[in-house]
Image 1 (spheres, rainbow, N blue to C red):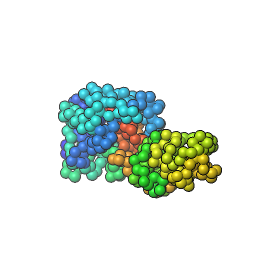
Image 2: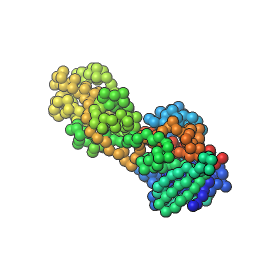
Image 3: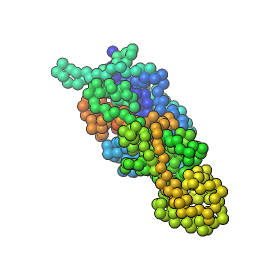
Image 4: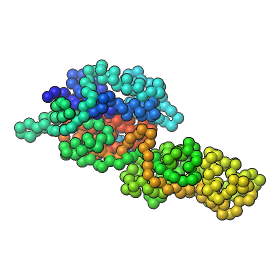
Length: 409
């Protein structure tokens, strides 16, 4: 049996970040990372389309936590300890400069996730951190003395047995590992998908994939779920921030609905009544113009045309010829268009789930288990998840850093 001071299960973002910080704070410790795959940092590699969305340019803890459907309350204290600015500084000290994009997402200036991976691998080598690949953990046990006192942990993989004084779990959304933690005695909240797009088959959007409405309001009918932001029409239905926010904050509720529900889209963020007044004015001012050809409200032309047809207005109808029913139908399509959602699709390569170790069983000053002293967690193994935009990584950096401070002491 090999013995280490610290074993980290999971060679992803949180695992490497914790290991490097532990080693930097206490170089005397023997640290080992166990990774089940042939190489680590897989999620880092695919994040942000291969560019790695490291964090988000939100520098106020009270504002940052609003992006976490699960973990908002628990992360407020930790974000006061290690925040976005600390993440930026950490990477810059190691030669990785980050940049801010218009939507607030932050990427390495190189626009390559390999920059982040190379940084982690170089730091791990620098501090002599042992990284063991293709080591799938099969059992996890607490070691006790003769009088019943905890003395550390025993970790079994397919071909080796290891022991350690302190153990960090950074396995992400691994159902298999959650079962090991349940056997150990922790409570795990059942996982459901948290970041997904809506599958919608509707003739209004079937032929216009790629069209973006820049600022809409989306409401899930018969619920309190509502969001704003850009809306992207895809081959499968709808995506972009307005939809992804709903999928994250509504993860549990939408799972109960078996991903079959109705949404109402307000494409122009006006009331039906205000829209109708403007349309009546347009009927006068644009009398001889064709409704179909002249997109209003800064909507994409192809989207406008589909909404016009859906309001039973022919492609050659002039504004002057619109009757009351057609004006009301167009106002309705613009401000309260209802779509049937039937299923979901994974958003790009963002495999995010709601669920994980129950937050009541974790001390968020140190990210240590309240049940087993010396056992720590970081990243999505906990029942914490966020909307898209670098927030899940920031949770990983913060948790890993605070755990590293406690584990290196």
